[in-house]
Length: 202
Image (cartoon, rainbow, N blue to C red; front, side):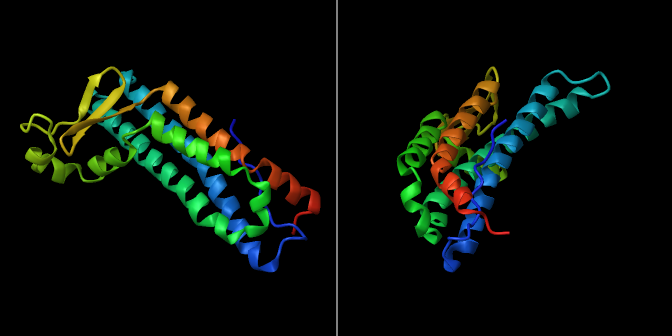
């Protein structure tokens, strides 16, 4: 089970940074919830592939797409949260900077983009699917059809701006996402330990 490091203000934390450190802690916890939410989308997708006999094929097929949508949007939210933590939240906590491993933060964000290069395009294609399907000349690679679906086993694909965008809805993808977040979390271990050593505020 992936655990977010506890960054809580200490008795030595400058007053002006108390709220900022609490916000940072909330964002780190949010990353853990993003992993769990992605996993929930994956489990719905996997359940829909082999539904109980009481579930109609029509409903199960819709569940497949709901699970994929959840995974796509949650991955986008996760990526945005990583960026916000590094570019916004850390500015509010200058007393922690020396104890945070910025190389690990940058490395993990880079890996996420390498593992999932279509995050942004998938999000836009999913959030505006009706509009995109209405303009296949702008989005479909063949200029004829802007159809989303499964052209490969367990790989959801959808056209966006003339290219097919893909995301594997698999346990392997979940493992990669978890690996990225665990590396990101590890960049805060020293800061968390120092705050604990100083003594957390109530």
